[in-house]
Amino acid sequence: MSEKVLNDKLLSNKKPTFPIGRSLEDYVKRYNRSTSIPVSYDDLLRFAGCITVYDKNDEDTLWVRCYYSDADREQIDANLKRIYDILHSDGRDETLDYLSVDAVDYCTFGNTRPFRIRIRNILNDGFTYFYVKQADASRVYGLELEHLLSPHRISFLVHKNTLIEEHIAGIPGDEFISTYMEGCDHQELTQIAKEFVKFNER
Image (cartoon, rainbow, N blue to C red; front, top):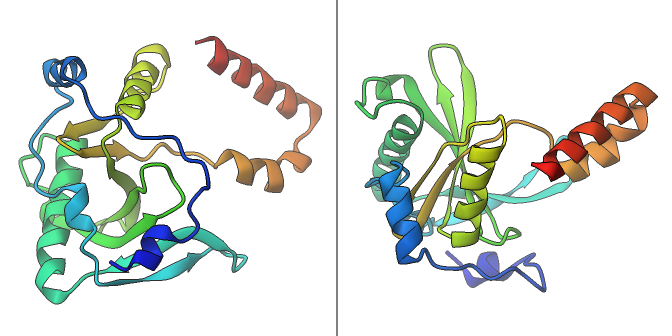
C-alpha cells in the first residue's frame, strides 16, 4: 500500500487510539466478544492498489476500493466470509458457499482507518456490510455501553489488534442534515429531537 493512500485526506487532529488493556481484554473474553479470527486488520493492509469511490452525485466518499494480488485475493475473500459467518451465525461454515465478497473499501479519514467489507448473499442478491478496524479501547467501551444501554443489540468481536464490527443501518448524520432535513415536517422534526434527547439520556 502506498504512503499516499495512508496519508491522503487525513484529519489534522485525530483522536488517538488506545490499546486494549488487561481488564478490558478479560471482559470481552468473559462475555464472548473475543474469538480467534482468520484475517487481521494488518492482513487487509496488503492491498496492491485502490481506486476512489464516488457517490451517486460523483462526489468523493473518502473511501477507496482496494484490490489485491491474485495470490492474496482468494484467501482474503475466504477468510472475510468466515468472519461474516462468525459474526452473524454460529461459525459452522454452512453458509459460505452462498456468500460473495463484493468489495473491500478503505477509509483514510476515520480515526481507526477502517475497512468496510461488502458481503452479498447470492441466493437473494441481498448485501450487508461489516467493518474491520484497528482495535481501540475507547471504541470497544462505546460499543459495549451502547449494547447494554440502548434497545439496539450490537455485534462485535475483538482479537489482538483487530476489531470486527457489524454495520449499523441508517443514514450518516451529515448526509441526513444536508439532504433530508429540509424536507421534514414539524412532526418529523419533533420526533427527531425526541430521539436525540432519549439517546443522550441513556
